[in-house]
Structures are given as structure tokens and as C-alpha cells.
Length: 416
Image (tube, rainbow, N blue to C red; front, side):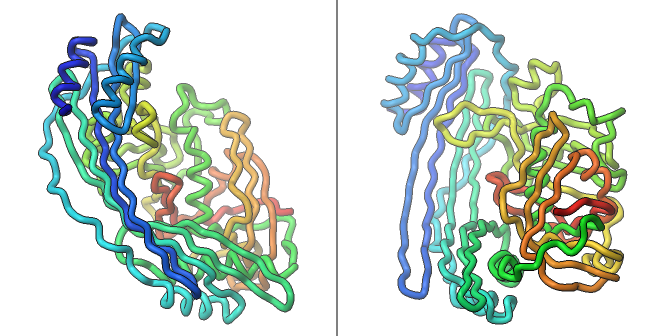
């Protein structure tokens, strides 16, 4: 059975109101350690269909065209509430040429040496998993859409072990490289996450300025992402003010893909401009409900799930960036959050956040002693509005979509 056969079947069931999606993915992953090297090769194929039958939306998915045909029958019998169909996109894009996936780079020894240098011998690289992958998507619909594109990724997870005397601490960090592997930056984050918690030194200040490493800033932004999906802004967004005036937030996946999981063209979508909330992420369905244009943010976490609105490449930016050194020099008394010790917790509706981290104390622009662990809690609105410095060193992290942040300076925060 071919995709054309499935398209004809969908046309029979839902004339003018159907969508057919196919994804093929391949990845090569290598696990490194001192004792072994193990390589895995994976391949996946998935098919999904979405259609409106008797005014009600239907969805089916399977790992083959024959399986999808059977799933169409089963899904067509389920009771579903009526809902209007979206306005389908219409465009045509040529399919990319099929290319092979190269093995991931062997960077274990280089990263191990960089970790030892960054930690001054207090941490060692225990294990490293590096994956290189390729995914190809094709989407056709009843309106004449027929687009295809390829995504490529290079990411992984590193395990680092910090030791001091008889004590040990493990840190496991995911990473993503858009270009050549940045081993020095990853080594510094691993060394800090593994060795700083061994200091036993609590936060020396109950309040002060707060410098956030890009990894921490990106985690905060990803946790606050529901703000950009809500039908109505929460009450704390007064007169559109959501953050400090120097801060902007953008979602722009143009470098990753030409269109989203529904075939809508990718574009730069401003969400916060100079502190003002100015946009929202839309897929076809939320755009229809809001009477707005789709923004190209229909995402598919899996071919087994229907598309939904979500971030694709979310990041902070500013018109007045400063160097990381300048931000450090401006801190009179505060903490540098180098690594998280627990996932960032954010409640956008209740306007609350909680961040647990390890880092370094700063006095008069100079690094002081390590801080084993600290916690900051408070209002999310105050955290965002107190950002007084944005650097130039933006880095993207898997979240699972890419979330990016430079070093950030918060003018005032409370610590425990």
C-alpha cells in the first residue's frame, strides 16, 4: 500500500478535511566509558492521519500503511465531540535527498581531559552517550499541501563524578550541539555540577544579585513556556508587562525546519518585546479558536500523537547585550547559579517559581567560594522583571525542543 492509497481512503471518508503524515527516523548512538564502547543503530517509521468525519475530529497512527488503514477503521467508530475543522495550509516543497547517518564523533577522551582540567582534578567523566540522528517528514492534505523536510541532530548525555575524600557526587547532563562539539563549555558545566555540591558551604547571603548560567536561564525559560500558550495572559501580566524592558523572547525554528508538524511555514515569532507580552504560539486548532493566523507551532512529540501547539526553538534576546565579564564585574554581592540540582518548578498561573542550584558566591565582581546548594523561591513576575543584564553567550539546550539563553543577571533575589 502507498501513501496515495491512504490519501484516497481519507478523501472517501472526509472529502476536503484530511491530513496524512509520515515520518522516518534513523539514529546512531555510541556509549563510551573507560571500560567499553557500545554502538546502537535505530530506525523508526510512523504514519498518522487526521480527518474530520461528520463534523468530528479523528486521529489514527500506526507503524505501516497497512496498519494505518486498520487504525482508520477503529478510530472512525469511536464517539467524538463535534468541532470545526481548521483552515488547512496549501504549499508544495520538494522532498530532500535521502542521506546516510554518520557515526557520532568519539570525543570521550578529549572531554575527559577537559573535565579534569575544569575541575582541577575533582571530577572525572564516567560515561558519555552521543547520538547523531536524521528524521524525514512528509505531510499531505486535502487542500493540496505536499511538503517534505529533513532534520538532523547531534546530542547526548554525559555522566560526571565528583570526588573529595571519601565523598562522591554524580551529575548527569543532557547536551545538544548545533555545530561542532563545544567540549570546553560542556566540561565546565559537568565539572561544576559534579564538584561544587561537595563543598558543604551553604549560601553566604540571604539575598543579593543573581547571575544565571545559560543552562539555568534556558531551564527557567522552558519552565515558563506555558505563558506563551495560554488563551488568556495570567493576572500578573499587567498592561502587557511580562518582563524587564530590556528583555525579549522569540521562537524561531527557521534554522531547524522550513515548516512545522502541520505543514505551516516556519517564521520568527516574537512573544515578548522590550518586556511586553506581544504574541502567542498557535497551531491550526488554537489559531482557529482564537481567530488568529497559525504561527507554525504545531508540534508532534511522536507520530503516535496528534499535533499540538508548542515551542520549537525558544530563546531570550535583547537589543542591549553585555559581555559575560561585564555582568560579572557589575555584581557587588550575590550568587552565580552554575548548575541546577533539581528541575525548575514554575506555576505560571499562580505566579510562583522555585529553583535549586549549586554555584559560586560573588563579591565586588570577583568569584568567592563554592556554594554547595541554594534555593530561590518567589514570584515569577518579579524574577522576569528584575532581569537587569543579558549577555552575548547564548547557548541552546534540549528541553526537549531547543531552549536558549545567554548569561542573565537578576538585580535582586532571595536565597535559602
